[in-house]
Length: 172
Image (tube, rainbow, N blue to C red):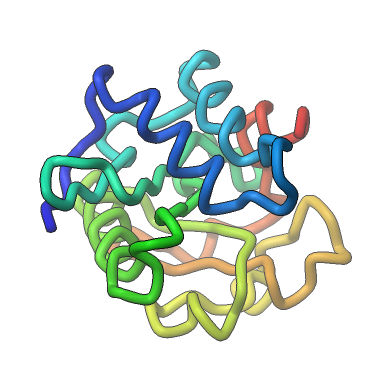
């Protein structure tokens, strides 16, 4: 398996990955697939943080981060998600490899935090904690423990306050 940055030629495969990974009912496209397209179209998808997992020449997984804001700071944090892996490749380490790669890339780019909405039992293994413990307020208080953050090398405790995802998230 190879983890690399997405290219324009990967866009249809990325859409298909999220469509299959998040499909809840036959014939209905889950919101995660068009979300990635909208983040890209809006210019909020961060290119170096949009990664694909390739197995035998085919895209089998994708993760991305988008622009976000904490308080008045538009650069301290990025929003991770969605993370999708084709069902036939789930539970084989593809998702973990993508998370490790995107967190490392966000750190290398100098961001202080990666923030996400996800399952604590899964994301805690990557160092994510409930965002409220870092004084980061969720856009929706009902998210509770599912709204999580991971500090990076550039993190400062002053990087706190209300978190805001890129506008495409509020349209889903």
